[in-house]
Amino acid sequence: MSFAGTVLIVDDESHIRKYVCLILRQFAQLTIIEAANGEEALGAYERERPQLVLLDVNMPHMDGIETLRRLKEIDPTCSVIMLTSLANRKTVEEALALGALDYLRKDTSKDEMAKTLTDYFGSLDASASAPASP
Amino acid sequence: MVSSSTPHSFPVSGQKILIVDDDRLNIRILEGILNKIAGYVTAESYSGESALAVYDTFQPDLVLLDVMLPGIDGFETCRRLRQQYGEKCAPVIFITAKSGSDDVVEGLGAGAVDYLPKPFKPKEVVARIRTHLQNRALVEQQILLVEQLSRANSAKNRFLGMAAHDLRNPLASIRGLAEFLREGAVGRLSADQLDLINTIHDASQSMLIMVNELLDVAAIEAGDLKLTLEAQNLTDLVAKSVSLTNFEAAKKGTHVEFTPPTDPLVLPIDPAKMKQVLANLLSNAVKYSPPGSTVRVTTQFDLPAATCSFSVRDEGPGIPAGERDKLFQDFSRLSVKPTGGEKSTGLGLAICRKIVEAHHGTIVAENLPVRGCEFRVTLPLSP
Image (cartoon, rainbow over all chains, first blue to last red; front, side, top):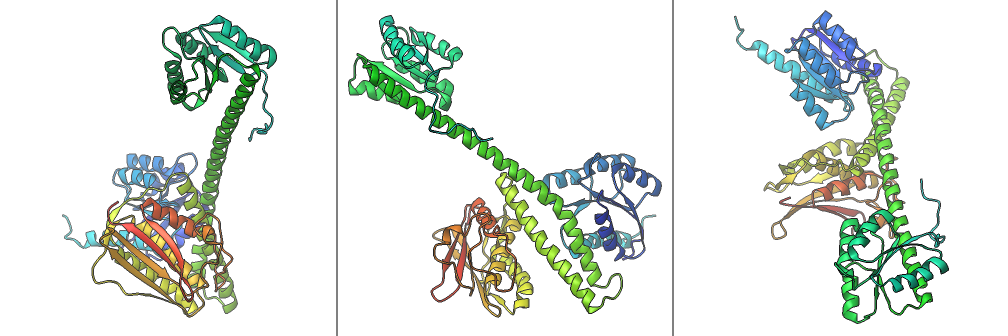
């Protein structure tokens, strides 16, 4: 796993941030930052320019979909994986249509969640090992 | 709120009756009976057309309708009333001098509930009208009650959904954090500590399953059971579920046996939902069979009937006599208990039935001759 970078976790529930944080620690060389709501997430994104955002769907005030929309306005190339508690097909589809890469179900086991992240980091490795562009 | 009036207390006087007759003398007589004697409020019309207009403003509880009228006749007036007001239309009673059976039949066919032959016998008029008003009151009460109950039920489902949804995240975190602890991710644990952590993990795990089942039921009852059908090999699905279950079953020394048929059984199913059915039936079979049992799974293909089926046979106590009806109902647990102290919400089989039925399939359970029982799910080859 050669991915080394900053990951932003956005969730209004601190226990979820802690849990996801522990899952991410399994992947080496990550800097992890947290945000507890949409506004904080936008500020943190502007400051830190993380390589990946894990974004909760269900948040009070500015929900995940709206946050995603604004993140894409700030940086159309930002990489976002949604955090959802319920495989709410409609919301997930909406997020994917807005440019989210994938979604993580918070109510699945940590191994299942880790697998989605492994797949994502793996896809980065694969594209990194492809012939480098000038 | 459920209405406080009981079916036995009908306010008889004060109800509104529309009398439609082109013969004013008839109207006078009926008014005398209904208004003066029985205390009803009456209104009158001399033609079908005006009756339709008066009905709209007067909103009667019952209509007395002459058959022979200038303009549209009584039958047509009745049909139009039924057409316009549907189920909510007040009962219509025909007034007829001709009590020939053809007329009566046509009147009832037009949506009337009864007829009154002329000349009127006051007691008969009052008795028949009272009966029909009571009937109508009962029907209205029934409709109201059903509406109230279905509103209460959907409120319950919304509440259930919200509560279960909000419980799920913290539970998932508790379980996940316990997993990290027991794997030693944050330092070595003593045997006692590990035992406690395992208890936390298992308790949050079983609670998570319970919450998920509650959410499923709430979603299904709210009409949110939407299938995404794909052509799937049923055998693969069964094999995957069997190997997953065997992992858990091994803790009880129980084994799930499945010999896949050589030919694939491809049919349109929602793989995620059908996996849920399989997981449920398999875990039930393990749950209710004594430790060390063998659970047998088979798949069948029935070309003439254009169906595919799978069955799960356990070695448990079977379904107690008299409890078959409860088997696939919400929140119903039978008197038989899991053999390894496992938990049950009483929702699993109800969810299975709803998923299978959404696939236009059937699920049945039969006790086996010696011991144990067989659950069989049959699915159509085309949706």
